[in-house]
Amino acid sequence: MARRPGEGDRANRDAVDVNAHMRPGVPLDRPETFDPFAHRAPPARQREGVPPPGPGAVRDVAMRDVPVYGAAQPLHGVSGVLRRAAYRLPERGTARWLLLLAGDRVDVLEHRAASGLWVIPAAAGLALGYAAVARALARR
Amino acid sequence: MRALVYEGPYRVRVRDKPDPRIEHPADAVVRVTRAAICGSDLHLFHGFIPDTRVGTTFGHEFTGVVEEVGPECHDLVPGDRVVVPFNISCGACFYCRRGLYGDCEATNPSSDLASGVYGYSHSTGGYDGAQAELVRVPFADVGPMKIPDDMEEDDVLLLTDVLPTGYQAAEMGGVKEGDTVAVFGCGPVGLVAARSAWLLGARRVISIDRVEARLRFAERWAGAETIDLRDVGDPVPVLKEWTDGRGPDVCVDAVGLEASGSAFQTLVGRKLKALPGSSIALDWAIHAVRKAGTVSIVGVYGPPANLVPIGVAMNKGLTFRMAQANVKRYMPRLLEHVRAGRLDGRGLVTHRFPLERAARAYELFDAKEDGCVKAVLLPQA
Image 1: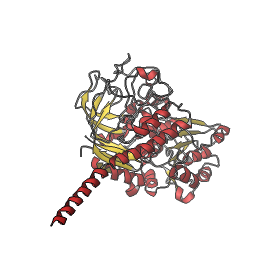
Image 2 (image 1 turned 180 degrees about the vertical axis):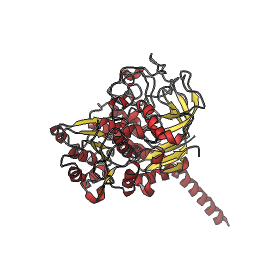
Image 3 (image 1 turned 120 degrees about the horizontal axis):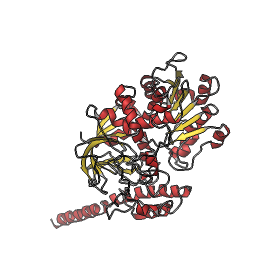
Image 4 (image 1 turned 90 degrees about the vertical axis):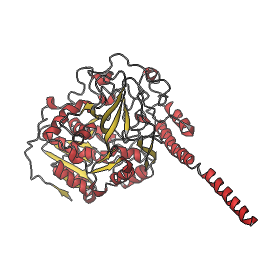
């Protein structure tokens, strides 16, 4: 059921960080310091033309001034409508997260539908080819 | 470039994608040389994390070579080898100045819940990840650490997440000399938490899991006693019995929202997704820890609602500590541990795959087949 490789109390000779001052995360709030290469003034805005990830209800005023964000996959379609609706709700509410998860599922369906659109021209081409061959055979 | 692309739950493919570019003057573009698959990537893979858009590239544990830098990037130059924290941090905001890089308020401004993370949905800023040939690195002078010339990328790769998160888990537990520490989960983070508990002075370390290979790994790599959930079902009575009836001083939840062990939570939370996953590992941690003990949580819990027995925790007067790791803060000390052989990150990596076989890597890692503890993708292979 269980294995106990140590027999009783084991001497711990590895305890090199037993003193709090050896622990990088103690105290939790360290004395304030800037990173050597951090921008002390607000850095330049991100390049124009990149859409933000979606306005949040929490800080949509602040984010207009924030220069860096991702937005690797811009909003689109019905999933985009659901996600925009979700962003208007507070983060503490379950409805926001359920809407976002619904948006995720719709996003997948949209993607699969779009990637399946090739079936229409392929089927049309196949039908035309079949008709052409049938017509040629009929002429013989 | 070639990149892993998310196409819906349980579907990832490697496809062509536009190269990332310098979007901001402080950005860099990095050519990825190693990109590990994290246990938390599986939560994305399974569709648990809200706002995971089709087309997203996962990957937040990576090393690489700087390819291009923006005009306001002064520390890095093309050709530098770097290891990059999973958090994206500005280095100058209220939180970064206090060393709380995982709480940076400049990199995911639309949210108060999570800061910027590479490849971890638009809930964490919508940044593409590094399971690709190239990745955009914002605030490139702040996060990345140059890899020392005498060290190889495999030695430092897990400084990006696994080593700091595991170490911080033990540290947040406030482990004191002589403590007994129980770690739920023998994934890479749980293994490092168990190993780190020794560094912090623990007298006993107990790891709990249900995967045979990982339990043996915990005994070998972390020197932990182990409890096999396939045999005991409920680990709480065993932990009580082993600790004079009181429970461990510190319990670490290194599992998160996809824990096995409760048929109800597995069915409703994980399979039907009618609840946001399963919190059974956290339940066990709360019930097992001794009164006035500490529960340290590094397992990922996504949406806000869950079944945590918070009333039990309140009545027991527990201290909860939890956080995303402040990776940059831990890197220097943990690098010393890596150099000294006290934390063997390289030893956790059991499988390596070329990027083109990423889908197979996810399948194998997800199924925990073939003794897989940690899988790493090699985009340049």
